[in-house]
Length: 165
Image (cartoon, rainbow, N blue to C red):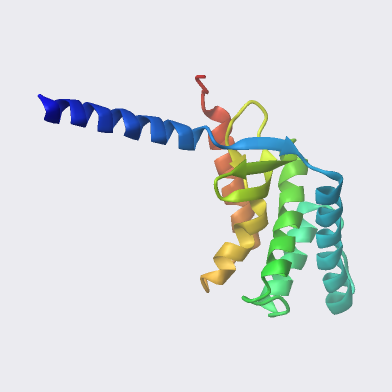
């Protein structure tokens, strides 16, 4: 009998722990500093494109993706340029945000504070900042258009979920 009690207590503790992990995330609006940082990162990518190609980011999906792809293809931004790769992720996020009517938020969980795109009516969020950098870091061939399309597919999948609270 004591072994059964010990088992039940252990199971209750495990259930409570898993519940507490799932409930430890929260979101906050972007701060003024977050907005400034994101603007500076976008400018950083735009300046690089202007300097190397004589063109610029213009907020149009086809143009901006093509320009960032050139930065990768011509090895102007490399595997170790994490800050620039994540800046490109912010630009990618802006494109996703604009086309799909999302909003930037701060997502805070046990791993820290991250900028994310909030999907209206859903708990799930997208993290575009690292969508490019994570793939480049693995040494994989990176096609930003493919990343954009996969993010859009994931977004559509999330939007179709029914959330039960």
